[in-house]
Image (cartoon, rainbow, N blue to C red):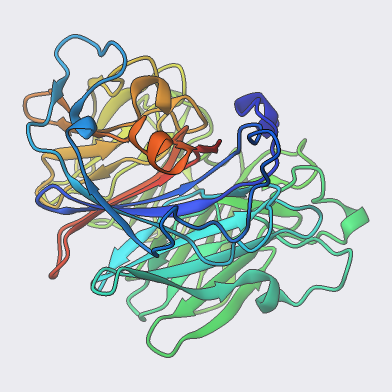
Length: 437
């Protein structure tokens, strides 16, 4: 695994996270975390981070949001109306992280938005889950992983929530934990495996579901079957040499149903209409299917597909996926026939790495940002809409260099996107890894 310095050559002195809310006419909520440039001579970065005017929320609308800063690919359109964006920082950032960051996919449900940040400090990191209220434009911390686990000094504590956050039919939020430092999931730091955690937004109770469903493995990706209450995960071995695993964990029975090697490298397809799970160990590698109806281990089926990220199933029975960095091919998977089609390429400029892909409720529009692990600013940090009918790409807004000039933040990379159109506040949520300068 490559170090963060490979992706962010600037000094890793701190990271920050902030939230954006933009009106398109719908709402865009974006959570961003940052790697700093070398600070201005004689100036120290202060914590917690604050907006220049001391306000908790900064609201902006500008024609700059619609101006590209580099050459776009032929045929890429730009929206005609600039969004209005609310900007605010996450709480808990009271000290320089090592670094602070955002990973995985978040959730909007019941008019609220649930998201997470983490500090990579090793061997004891820290991670938090938050609830964003669009009525009050405020974030509050609902889960503190370090406090929940209560590990002794010197024992491993996860620094990331890299999995999805999903809600079950029981009303609980479910997610898995993941390591911050990549060399601390060892016996030296008493590592036994990572945790599945749940939180009830109504009662505000947080519980450990299980520890180490795959012993001595982290949980970088997951998806929940909300009806059957089966938590599916893809792991990364603590020793970094054993194969990744796919596992299925029954929440009600509190038991592992299956655990097999060569699991998903970063994402899974969930067909809610059938309950089936699909994954690949590498892009266009063997396509595996797990069917809870027969309870058998995953089996290989025909087909080639890229799967760095995937959408939910659409009303017409499709799941859309995207290939990993260097490719950005968009795919359409038919959950009824298991037929796979290439439908285009997601890139709008030079950046090709997309780690979060979402689809609107009609199933027509995909939303994403290119440049997940750094580099999105080279394309102006564009928020992109892809029309699956016309196969056209449209940039809804460019966030760079506006926020570089306003709050001295480079929006380098995106790792989270969620599109929701329910209730009084339809929202698009986006997470970033920019750089503080």
